[in-house]
Every structure is written in C-alpha cells, then in structure tokens.
Image 1 (tube, rainbow, N blue to C red):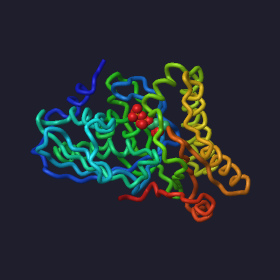
Image 2 (cartoon, rainbow, N blue to C red):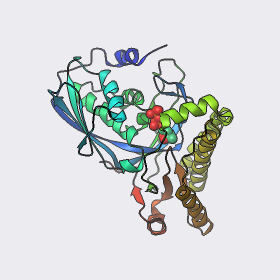
Image 3 (cartoon, rainbow, N blue to C red):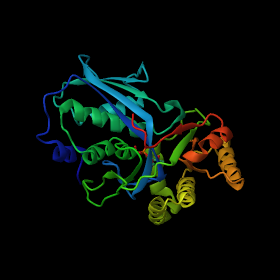
Length: 333
Ligand code: DP6
C-alpha cells in the first residue's frame, strides 16, 4: 500500500527550487453541503465517498512561513506560541517532516484564523491548505491547485477542498495511492448563495472528527447506508446548482447533515455533537421556513450550526439569528 512519502515523491521529485526566506499566503475555510464522513485509507485520508463544499471567502487562515534557528519548529496560532506538546503542533510538525528539503531545517509557522477557531469551525481545513500553499511558495514547486489539493488532503481530508473559493467537489477516487482523490471547483458557480456561522457553544469538542469517523465506520450499522445517501444527495445537489433550485439545494444539504449525524449516533460508543442549543437553532430554522424565510442548516463535528441562504435574505436572516457571521463564498481575500 502507498504511504505519504511515496505519493509526495511522485508529485515533488525534481521540483525544489532555492528556498524563499519568508512567504505569506491565505486559504479559505470550507463547509461541506454533502459531507465527507469515513475513510477508505486512514494514512492518506482517502474518503469513502465524494463530497461537495462551499468555501468561506475571506474567512480562513493566513499563514506566514519563515526559518527559525531554534531546534524545533515554532507554531504560533492567532498570536500565541503553542507548546510542542499541543496536539495540533504534533500533527503539524509530523506533516512538515514530509516536506523539509534538509532534515535539519526548522520553520516558524504563524497562522492567523479569520474564522472563530475557538468555536470549533473548520479551521484545520484552511490551516493545512494554507501550509501547503506556503510550502509551494517557499520551495518554488509551482504546482497546480489540483496537486496542492492532494498534498493538503494528507494533512486533513477536508483541506483538499480549501484551495478554491465557491463550490468545490472532492472526488473520492479509486486508486490505492490517491492520485485520483482530488478536489476541483465546479464549473457552475452561484453567487447568490451565502453561508452563515452561528456560534452557539465555545467549548472544545471531546472527540475530533478523525476519531469519530473511524469509530462510525467500524461500529455503526447505519454507516452501511451512507455511501448510497451521498450518491443520491450529490446528484440532487449538482442538479440543484445547475438549475438554480435553492429549495432543492438547501433541503438536500440539511438531509445530508442529519443523515451523517445519524450514522455517528448509531456508533458504539455513540458520538453526539448536538447540544441543547444546537437543537434549538435547528428548530428555529424550521420555524423560520414555516414562516416563509428560505433558510437551511448544516452541522459538522461540533455543536455549532451553519446556515445556507440567499443574499437577498441576508438582512432578514441576520435579524432572526443574533450574532450570525455571514461569509461570501466568492469573495477573494
Ligand atoms: C464533518 O477533514 O476534519 O467536517 O481528514 O481526519 O482531518 P480528517 O477529518 P476532517 O473531517 C471533516 C468532517 C466534516 C465533514 C466535511 O467537512 O466534509
């Protein structure tokens, strides 16, 4: 079976140019409307199914990469230097080890998130995509975005979708080395669509998505139905986007998120990210729809809710959902 280093050699051999001392890049966060849930290869983060996301415009991660003469990498997140023991630092340093031109070189990575990190929004996706973009810039690889998406995916699956704005589809692929497990932006974009982030609960989640996914695949009887669910939802969403059918897009996104959560609730032990305030927000969305306001929700591996709506309704929705942070998926940083 292929490992990360083999895949990286295929992509990067002969590509390293003289290193730039300092580089500064940005990658947007993304929210999946059709979710990635379950891996067919844990090492390479190869998914069981395709997924489809919307990027969050200027909400994402800025990453400054420079050299350090310290013995270890320095990782600074939102202005605070993290200790070497921090789980995110361990994960990032292991990832950086795959790419160093000289084994002794050490980096200073300063990541600043414009998305509320503490509230558990998808910052690892934009974080890893930004690091890969920074490495590409530092070493002058000049890789096409599709290949950067393969490298970012090995840091965190959803990072493979954070190389573009707008709608992005991640193809699951079939090959063992994942060279066909790549994301691409949809040709058909739809600039009326917005995503709203509703911060409901700032507590750190007890179980991360990597572990929750693994447990679901291994123990949930409902997971068997998930690939068919995604196939149906993906077809529906693509045609909704083609036909500009907002109701179909929103309904399908909501169903897909709830079905994903159903698979994890049926795991052993169960995984339940819902908090009382998550449920209240879902009911408020349903109530608003009953009253004629076209708004739908989606939810990931945390208690917070994301709203999907059209720009024309932004004012009404921001009034209804206090504290909502609205992202424009087509706005470039
Ligand atoms: C529920 O990409 O965080 O947000 O590949 O293990 O790093 P790893 O998982 P991650 O999982 C994201 C799961 C999700 C759905 C999605 O973004 O598609």
